[in-house]
Image 1 (cartoon, rainbow, N blue to C red):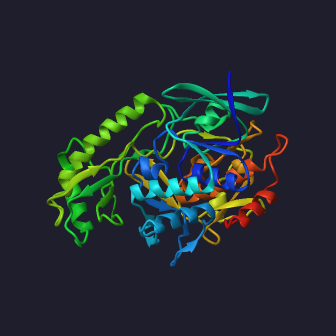
Image 2 (cartoon, rainbow, N blue to C red; image 1 turned 30 degrees about the vertical axis):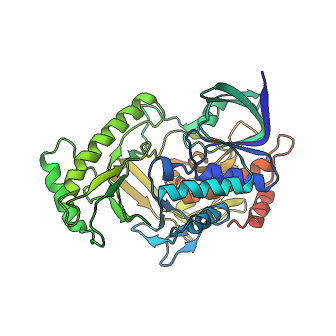
Image 3 (cartoon, helix red, strand yellow; image 1 turned 30 degrees about the horizontal axis):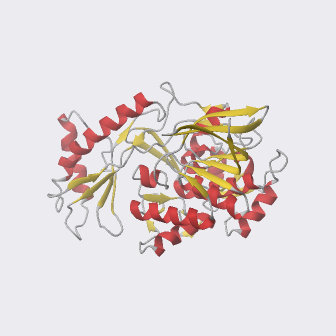
Length: 417
């Protein structure tokens, strides 16, 4: 069996994975980034989640909580002529996105750093010896190849690598699990330019629609709606659906139901002033997943960390987005972040429990159910991914590096710790 070898292998090319790969490469590690789609960007590009949350503290002015590779990506977006300025939403500062710009910005960021990139690649297995992950099996249309590394980073979102490596899960997913629902954001064209969104009217129309509709709109407040940069298309976040997020059967049901709802809900939207000629441009390549599996780390983040805004001497990233917990379709609650408006994520939360050379990043970082609502957003994923990549590059003799070394390297790469 022929095996390819790298210093670091990163699984998943979203915010966390790209940041991990860039961070590791900048440390001098020969790094491979694997992504199942034909493009990078994660939920921003494959699920049409066209807003970055978590880059800024939720204060009256946008105070940065993430820099480093995340800031580099925002600069690539600006270099392509797209606005990446923060704007205030109901729950904090966000950056609106154009998906095609984001795809190219990620390409340039990763290629510019010298990362080895393989798109259209899906991890289907892993082999370990004792507490050390040795190789992973990666499938493409040719078949399966085997790849080894000194250290691996799971930035898959669904904990795919951790699952294959046998890491114990705090949230196992599956049909019996209570998971945050998925969303299918809609991109709408044909809306009159410069029209003001009449939120009160939309709420009235939804209330009327829900009286006898077989496909009720689960967000009676009208959801979230904004103009997109450049095109001025409208982005509407209103469809929430249950799914386990990992099985083909469950995902198929959610995708089919989402597309039906998209066309059905569009008819309600067309009753709005200025929306008479509105049409559906896109539902995105796949539905947007909030939660599936969560592996145990060596030091899971907790809700108390968020509520108290705890600082940590081993902090390697800052989480500033309110703990956003979707308990059911259309039903969300937000727990505020205490202290200075952010809390530290310790290095131990990136260390997979039971596997010495596996790092966790993005939605896979060790956390309880409530703090997960803050860690999972894409701005914060850039920060945890960046730290995970540096930690992986510093792995020596099968031992995780001290947090102080990771912090120092992050500071040298202009991250906030």
